Image (cartoon, rainbow, N blue to C red; front, side, top):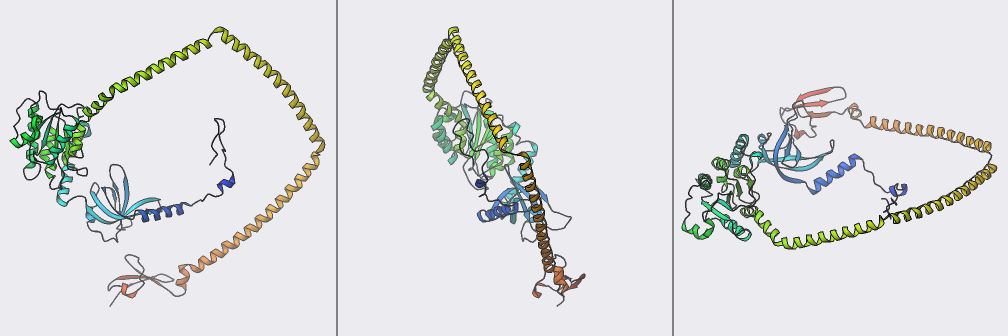
Length: 490
């Protein structure tokens, strides 16, 4: 590391000395990859991971039986391999586009220097048949363009009246009213009550969305019951304008509890709505078909209410701080104008012709004095340099120096040649020794002494114990010259 600069012209030590670089530890690519593999296997190890399968490959050239594929989501992708020898159920679920839950070990494939997941278990993501139905409906509606980003409509920044589709007795409506009361009490809410769970709930949700659209166009809205009247108070009063948006919401629950929002009838009602729709179903981890079709998805009912009231809430804070901000900006503007006036006054003083002429005369005097000093100093330097050269030339004899240098050069060349020959002989001896050791340790030498290697003819796995062989199993025995094929008998 170079030393820090002390001024704008001191750039520090640009080239570190060899002594500072001598302490570096240099790793080979294999060593670094091995260290990374150990870290991954130690710190990550066995994990569960979910994503979508893509680039599925089953190599047919070698008939290995291994399966290679990539698991991806919206932000990243992971290389995966399922070996033939792994006893993994549900292999048939592996297909491009399938969303799965995988369990395996994270390791490094050293030949390519990339990390991968060795799969040990395969499961469908979600809850069985419902998850499959969810995936099929999602794929169908996506193909029809119901999820297209270009059809998403922006929400109004300052909504005055919204429609609310939810259960009048659920926790979601209380969360929404609490947030609205705190952030924008003037917001009017028109409730279209419906069931949000159970048989027939999807049809009620879709009907409520269509009812709010009719009301926004000038129709009449069915009055809620007395209990809902007390809950909402004056918030359900009929507005003087059209609805700005519709909020479809309910609290959290299981996949079965939220299934009404995964029905096609609800998705098409949201898609056909002339009013922008916000979907807030369940908790942050829950996703439904209505979330994909809606113009905006909120994680929870409270988050949806905060998003809807964000414009008014932010404006309220802005208005509250506006006087102080205006005063601060006016003070800064006045300070800048005063500073500008002072600078203009100083520039006017410096720009006076008499001032400029005096500066030029002073500059001329400085240049004249510097020129005389430099001329005298240069003359002294030249005389001193010529004197030094003449003195050194008198002391040195060029012919003798050249002869000495030539003799040194000849000696260095001879020593270099001798060392090279010696080093070459050493390396040849080491190479011959290694070649001999390699030949003695090779499997051909072991087979030449009368030994053999017995392997499974189908897999090539070496059979080391007699109990590992099964009746009828085909074996392949390798000897010094050729192979012997046999079948195991009782």
